[in-house]
Figure 1 (cartoon, protein in one colour):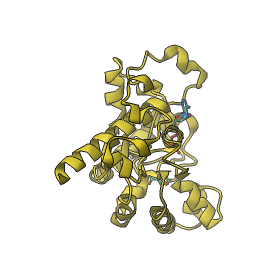
Figure 2 (cartoon, protein in one colour):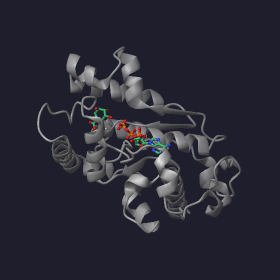
Figure 3 (cartoon, protein in one colour):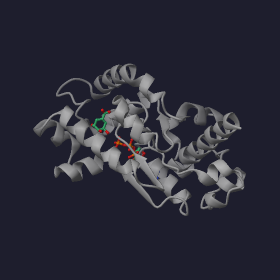
Figure 4 (cartoon, helix red, strand yellow):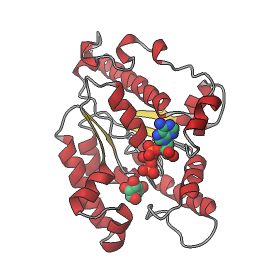
Length: 253
Ligand SMILES: Nc1ncnc2c1ncn2[C@@H]1O[C@H](COP(=O)(O)OP(=O)(O)OP(=O)(O)O)[C@@H](O)[C@H]1O
Ligand SMILES: O=C(O)C1=C[C@@H](O)[C@@H](O)[C@H](O)C1
């Protein structure tokens, strides 16, 4: 996850959640964004097709900017609307017949990976009712936006420090654009993520909705993005998508 929108949002996409999952329940402050407090049409498991909101009813909801966990939650949360969720990196691996992105970069090249990534996104763009978590670099090719914009795009905006900590904790071997043989893994990952983000931030800003983990944490009264759960992030993504659709409908009318 060198990058993250594509909804991998910033390089590194979403989340510094490297701690054991069991630890969260004790540490997570009571979330303000609970399913009960959501408008009924966005409550988890609700059939969005019956929504009173025509924009939501009509939406072919395709969130191409969520990462794997948030994407999975989004799919589960909208079971009746979404049928499938995909992670484009995995589809590229499958298409190429090589089991890791790192190896694809090594045996072929970044350009070869990007060509395959574009083909995967093109194929997904003709499908309906799915959630796609893209690789973080998917944002850099304008053609990919023409595919991703067939649906709703969401930028999961994760602080670079949280991304660097998570990456340093698990190692950079699987992340070809971040991998360094020597040096402090956190410092190297942070420096590289920063330069990638500088190159890509205008592209991430093309997303229809931005979900800032910093903002969610602040709403919950703290500043630790590492304790936000995929469900909390997915709920915020649904709310942001709803706002986007509402504003779009208002402009149209
Ligand atoms: N249900 C969960 N509860 C808490 N943390 C989780 C949960 N699911 C995943 N995580 C953690 O959230 C972080 C982000 O996971 P995820 O795989 O979605 O991110 P990603 O950006 O797709 O990752 P990568 O870029 O490495 O492919 C990981 O550290 C993962 O361990
Ligand atoms: O940010 C990037 O450019 C990348 C992110 C990963 O998901 C992979 O798609 C690949 O490692 C490139």
